[in-house]
Length: 393
Image (tube, rainbow, N blue to C red; front, side, top):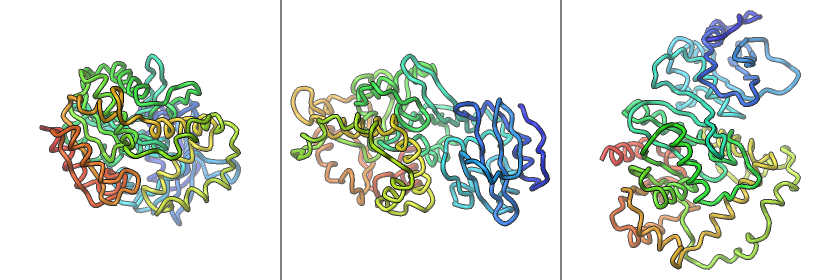
């Protein structure tokens, strides 16, 4: 553990947190970060992370910060005295984390003082073809969680909280092109390419077989992994998975154009893009949704992040439904046991897809919930109870 003493007076709880800093539990891209800690009404400080050392200073009026954590002073006192209070405060909305969940939640993990081998950790894994950012917690049967297009590993933080203490080693990955993983400009960004990245991650972590959980595009990637690499997959939970369209795709001609390449040229000043995105997303300034929008913007405002977003979305839209290599033809051959979780209010993947899945994959289990497109965030209790029951067999 490597720290330096705070160089200013302030809240004892913040000093205590920084004194416990464990650099091996956080991944700091570039090796340097500034985490702003706001004890509402009692002071604002910056935790400077550099070279494996953390130090606390008064908040700078100059320059930017990478992540913002804000809570009442009493909440910071709770976090300092209880190693697991940080994530509990975040889940219940008493602690806000904005701009960068990778660093914000990573800071909580690195200052928890927890030495339990099941503790939350943020790491970087280099595979044969990829440089991947992951978070993990728990021990037991491995469960790899795969986010949707425009999302990050942080969309599965509720899953980590629910399942990691209950016999699962939960591993959430930023797919190539997203979050804090590398963003190659020459990747295929289709389901087989992503499935290969998941298998490479299993190889590097020395995991022979794992359960998979995928939301939206992550569900499509889990399906492809189950089809191409069934020997590496135990059971699968597909949360509102992206599936090949059965109707004619009227915009097919447009998405065959080089839209991802245009992402490099697209002007994207934050002051213009952010208000547009927040107007399009209901509840974009509240709780988990606000943090999710922050994560999306963090990647989308970079040329390589836009390329990955457009190319991934384009590949989903162009997924062929029929023919020998069509999605629905191949789905019938999938062997891992599978549970689909559908949101009755989902506007992106209508629940009407369920009847087509029942026809192609009659042995699959189905759960219907009164939520939208991200069940693990919108209805974490019922979602994770169903997941745990199914994955335990």
